[in-house]
Amino acid sequence: MKVLVIAPTPFFADRGTHIRILEEALALEKRGHDITIATYHIGKDIDSSVKTNIDVRRIRRLLFWYKKIEAGPDWQKILLDLMLIRKAFNLARTQRPDIIHGHLHEGVLIGWIIKKVLFWRNIKLVGDFHGSLTKEMVSHSYLNGGMLKKIFFTIEKWIDNLGDTAIASSKELTNEISRLRFDHNVTTVLDGANIHHYENTASKQEIRKEFELPENKIIVTYTGALMINKGIQYLLEAIPMVLNKCDNVYFVVAGFPAEEARAYIENNQLTDSVRVISPLDYFELPKLLLASNIGVDPKDSTTLQASGKILQYMAAGLAVVCFDRSNNREYLGEGAQYSEKISAQGLADAICELVGNSQKIEFKGQLNKKQITKFSWDVSAEKIEENYEK
Image 1: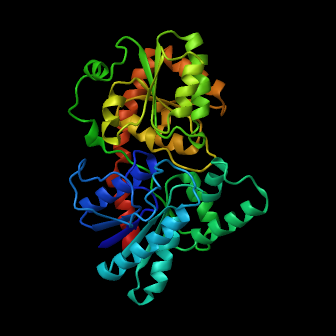
Image 2: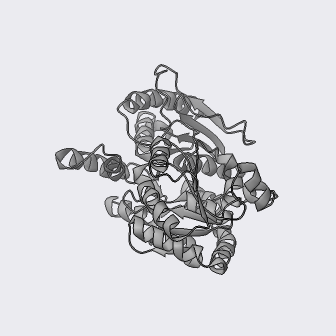
């Protein structure tokens, strides 16, 4: 099929939303579909990193000063999305897609507008939801409550119903959207991992030398956005708690934006035991994880987002520390050390429990390496294709 993917974001950037958009598109291309991605004027070109015929089409650079690539709302995105409507409309008019695949709530809304304007084409719309629009805005401190929050929730509920079918990135989000959609038609399409990225690499010691990491310590790594709604504050507060108990631990915090994380590390005199890497190229991620022993995901369930980073940790054969969420349980089973309390102290206790038992680290890491085969992007693409065919 011809698929027009609408990505209302500066694609490609090295973070979870973009990884999902890219890897879904690559896996669908592998299954024979013709993919075009309509996106903003900024973002890295994917051609230099992957072999693909995916056609990435960008809006004009009229907002040339807009260079924000991190997640979060911004009023200027309204202007960018208006320009994206024009770009996507022209692509739909000339390319005649069978499917419009809208990512995020804005992408679904744009897809719906195009579908209605070109109604005689009978284009089908698939909504690909990564999280709750309202809850994410609250997590970024753009909404606090009251009437404005109610208005945005009403808009979100309406958008949830626009697609001919909907897919969601986590079980928690599926339950939420299924409750809001009139037809209750929502499919869970979990994030995946590209297992091939973790094959035929150098040894752990060689990679540690490359990254200038200590060779004789247990390396605990976080990768992803360094923002409050990703739970980074839990991890930063947990680090000194762990280091006070364990002297054989070294932390790596990799992602962006890094200013606040770096300031916290320096102000608390943790620079000898913590390395901040920013930015971290998605295609360099496997090497860093293969140099590590434990992966940490401090995200709580506030935004109902899935956690693609956990799958990367699993593909690298790492034991994982995270909060006890249903989505995390679905991925990891016994492969994680769970913190039942959503707090920095709970996270620190779970890390210390794992650090003190090398056999448990090895067991959970090997278990995750076996379990990751159930969560490849090929499996995700097959589910998406089933929705297309419906």
